[in-house]
Length: 328
Ligand code: AMP
Image 1 (cartoon, rainbow, N blue to C red):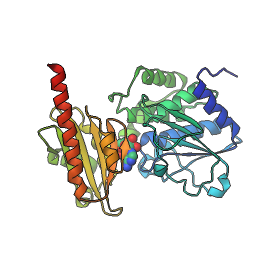
Image 2: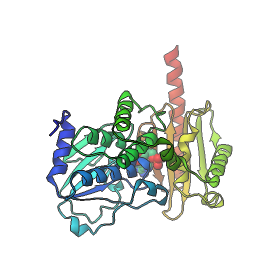
Image 3: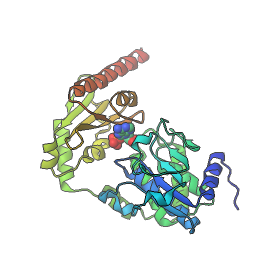
Image 4: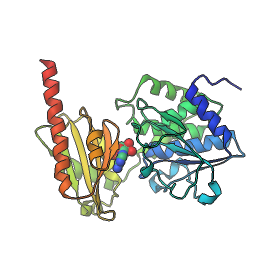
């Protein structure tokens, strides 16, 4: 067997080898990184160990069906299994594990650590995506890779790094991508057709967001999106989050947020992005969290919307003041 040089990768590979029943899960409201990482890891484990029962669970999203099909399980059949948690640091946001009596947790994630402490735990905030970490694991262990697995991992990396634009993109990202390409035959144009396919409604909705975003003097861009607007443009609640990265690099905007009314769950679903100030500490005040510059939250009462906007605006003001005084 090829020796595994990295100690965490060795521990993860051994743990996977040890179990015959493995359940892979990720966060609720999945994005391409979450879905692609769980399906790629499942498919690689099955390819390497055809006798293991390995499933990737969570609610499916029709928009992401090109990554592969998720598994429906009877939790009793996976008693004492290994639970692999990907792309999520808090147990409450893991999708689909309510009745699962797993034996151990193995965590692989690029979010700041929260309450999940894996028996084997690989948390790397410097990674641009969970797919980058799963690709690292597969490329540098005896786990097998094929073109479909490589394509999924590539799309997760491209999507979560916003096409290598975001600051979490490092030389390691490019090294992993180079290895993925060298070891498989990824067909880029076809993959991009999947990732960037969108409806005219969505493009028109992006126009609505751009035309209606308020921008404060301190550089906070914000928009409260009523449920009727989502209906009018025939888009879903995930759409503002899917579009929020397109509002990067606007000269007048330092931090930007979309606050979408979600009457079904009696909350406001919030996405936040930043070009400077750290925002996950503010998100965590409003039932949220995430990365330093890309976070989400759930506002449960309307009165808190103003407080939330004020908190973000103050963060912009402080950041601008600190930046100016550093220049003096
Ligand atoms: P989004 O704006 O939905 O793309 O989310 C940006 C980042 O914040 C992702 O890493 C999410 O996993 C994280 N996130 C979103 N909503 C929440 C939440 N309610 N609690 C904790 N983290 C969240």
